[in-house]
Length: 386
Image (cartoon, rainbow, N blue to C red; front, side, top):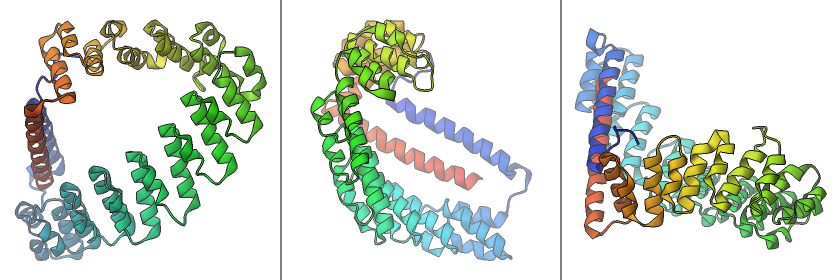
C-alpha cells in the first residue's frame, strides 16, 4: 500500500470530508456562482430549505427549476410536500426515505418504478424482504423481490414472485448459480433451463450427484467428465471439450493440461485452468500465466492458503494482500511483517474491524454514525452551493 494509506478509521471521515469540500469548490466554480450568474431567489430557497420562496419566480420554468434545486437541499422532510412538481417533490421524499430507512416517504412517491426503487433501497439496507411486499403493483413488487434476491441471496424473495414465470425463473437460476444450490435449479419449470442451471452448479460445486439430475445426455456427460480427473473422458463432450479439459486440469492440478489449451482471451480456458491449478495446488507462480488477473490470482491463493509469503510474488500492493491474509488466518501478528508503519496500522485496524472486542464495536459504531452524519451534511452543503 502506498504512503498515502489511511491508518485510522477516524481519518477516513476527514479525508472523505476534504474530498467532498473540494467537490463543493469545483461545483460552485463551474456553476457560475462566483461570477454573479446565479439566481438569487433559488439561492435563497436552497439556503433556507424553503420551497415556498420559489413562488417569487416570475415564470413557470423558473419556478420549476427552483423547486428542482430545493428538492435536494431541504433538510426537513415535511418541506417536501410543499414542493410543486411531481418529479422534484418525489426526489425529495426519496432522499429522506433512503437516509432514514423509512418506507413512509416511499409511499409519497406516485411513480411505481421510482417507488419500487425506493422500497428496494430500504429493503437491501435493512435486509427485510417484507418491504417489497408493501408495493401494490405486482410488476413492481416482483421487480423489487428479484433485485432483493440478487443482492441479498434470498431464496425466500424468489419464492414470493408470482404471476411472472420469466422473472421467477431468472431469479431461481441466478440464485442457484450464485449459491451453488441445485435445489434452486430444481424449482425451474423449463427443463432445458433447469438442465443448464444444474450443469453449471454441478461443475462449479464438483458434485457428480447434481450431474445425475440432468435430463439432457450431452450436458450430463459433460458435467460428469468435468468433475473427474481423466482427460480422455472429455473426448465425449463434443464442442465443450476445452471447457471440460479446463475443469479436469484444475481437478487433477495438472498444468500440462492447461498448456495444451487455447490461450485466447475470448474464452479464457487456459487462464482459468492455470488459476485453478495455482489455487488447488497452493502454487502462486502459475498465476503469472494468467496475464489479465495475475495480481488478484496471487492474492486469492495467498488468502486461501493463509500464507502471507505468497503475497511477495505480487508486483504491487503486497501489504494490502498481507492485511487480507491476516484477517483470513485470524492472526494479527502477520501485520508485524509489514515494514511501513502506516500500512501496518491499517492492517491491524482491518483485523480489529473483522474481529472486534466489545469496546471496538462501540467505537466503530460511533465512528460510522459520525461519518454518516458528516456525509449527509456535506451532501447538503454541495447541493446548496451549486
